Length: 288
Image (cartoon, rainbow, N blue to C red; front, side):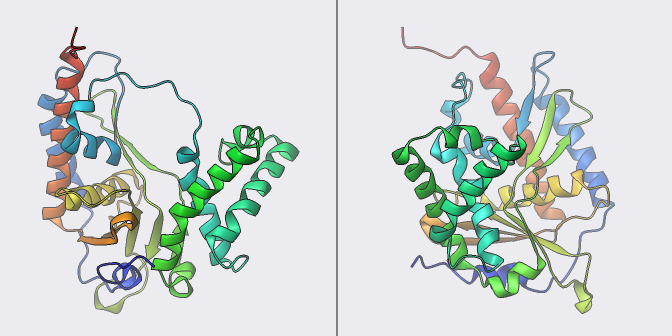
């Protein structure tokens, strides 16, 4: 079993000592506006730039990949693993299965059956999965089970499941001061936690799962998820904590959200936009 640095469930559900006031979001918006006014100055009119965790990480750790044309989209097992993995975790938390390896097949089959009966694609991959042969389906199920199993084993689901919202839609927030730029936050669960003074309700923590190992910018990345969640929320309530899990590395990281954490997230977004825009306007050498 993968060993983690600490207990993810304990870190996720720990009582929150302080909450960031909603007015801090106004300062976040102001700082974003000031920074992005320069960083995005070279963005072509009509261009669309989405900033999420993949973009933050690519700009910091793999900047040589920026500016390269995207490959045409085609379904692959790796594109299915998260959505099928989360659905399998939900089924396991409901007591229908003992673990993800047992759940992924029936959950995928049910999704295909529902699509054929109603025409509604809950996950979008149902027609592609339905057209695969036995080997292709096995590859998809193996990817999903591999993704979900360490998450299932890392948390005490008897404590987490009753207060967790799994696989909610991504948070999206358009940057009003810069046309074409929007922020996207994706995490695996949002969990209700006890607030300052032991008061229930209002406070929450986010749970994020990533591949590989945490880089030196992990704190800004986790804080980014809280920032986007707060900006996208009509209630203007910021999550108080973000717990990150890197199962392949057996690594656990926790970011308590305060003004300094939000400042780091804003600066990381500005840097990412600046590097990305520069890469888009500078011709990529082909070596010819």
